[in-house]
Length: 561
Image 1 (cartoon, rainbow, N blue to C red):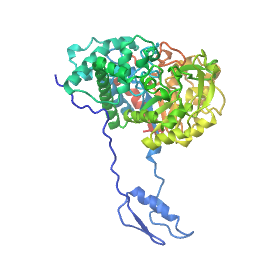
Image 2 (image 1 turned 90 degrees about the vertical axis):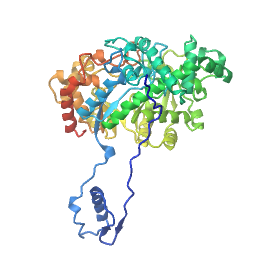
Image 3 (image 1 turned 180 degrees about the horizontal axis):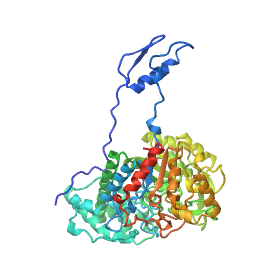
Image 4 (image 1 turned 45 degrees about the horizontal axis):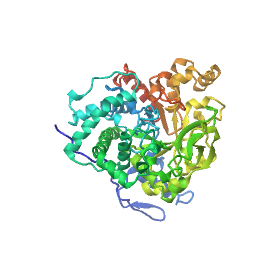
């Protein structure tokens, strides 16, 4: 059985070759070019030189040909929000195989230059997380359920005869998918280990955590025996001796995910598609992150949370939202130079081209709820790390492309923090029609340094939103968008987003497909029935050629190609 041999977990970095700067010699009334400069640089130089002339003096001969030059970093663009689990696929869930490449081709054909995904972390499999990518078991690992079995066959790690029978499911059943795919992914990992030997990785904490978790019938690590709960060296050594094979398999499966994802990412880059990831600000309590880094979280001496995350009451919830994630001990993190976050940001840079920080406002001020509380409304606002956090991050990793999710209760300090690091914020068209003309989500109030959405993964689809919108608000929407036909509302909202002054416009695939509420990805503050949406079996990317052409025409009209 032939086995692929490339084992690098980190992709090679590519640096553009920069030409050395050319010098320009100026005299009192003219300048000479001693080296050949690109035309746009010569014209820029001519404009700069004109400031040295007195009123009424002759300007350079090419002065009338000098025009403003576009800054590539300010290019207008558009993208689609579609999580990889939502593609069609033969085994109850999509994967990083052929369908991902077809989607990238479709994005390219339609003129898009951005693909946004939700967190790629493995969803929690306890506490009824039901596949949520926002309650993962580790902040840095990849979701191995996305590993393509067909790609493993191509790599010689599985045979066609070992593949399961195709499953045609309209929604993802994560438990059934795991039961089907986990044994085969493990088998592929075993064969890779036999071929290559031990694989070294940065995944040690995650691997140990998974090994212990698999051997104990406990709800969370808080219930583990004290030596394991407190990471006694002798207990960890014993786990390694007893679970060495499991640990090696865990690391190898992560390698398989990394290899397949990097193939997808590299193909996207070749097609001019930037991948935007999503980073939840908080991590789950039952995770390797908290277990291995207790001093960085607000826990009591026994390891139980003192305070947990949430948001205060607002228009969508009278009692607020109780998320329940442990809160960071920001003072302890700052003493260590935010090293845990630096590792996390570097990992994000490794798998994404840019990424959104979910609940960005928590870095300015966060809502802290006593862990024993049943509702979020009893919490208090506490100060976040602010600018010092980003100063440390940028010193360590350099400038990185961050998008700030600044929705919800946004105070002045959140806005100032976002602007201080130059990060674009967000606007959501669905939120724009509930008040007056000053609503910041209406297109005429958008900013250039912003990302505008028709809706996010937490919103209903445009069609679903429209179906329950009061008649008075429907009238306002139709009037604002200058349309008369309700049937075309999803694409009218897409057009509204594309016409915005915001540099980036993103629309969920569900809105492109004009789907209703049954296609909604998530309903906030609900535990069941989320994260399972998949593209209809009747839809293929080949069948969306007409939509691609129409979208490309719209992107061209609004300067987003």
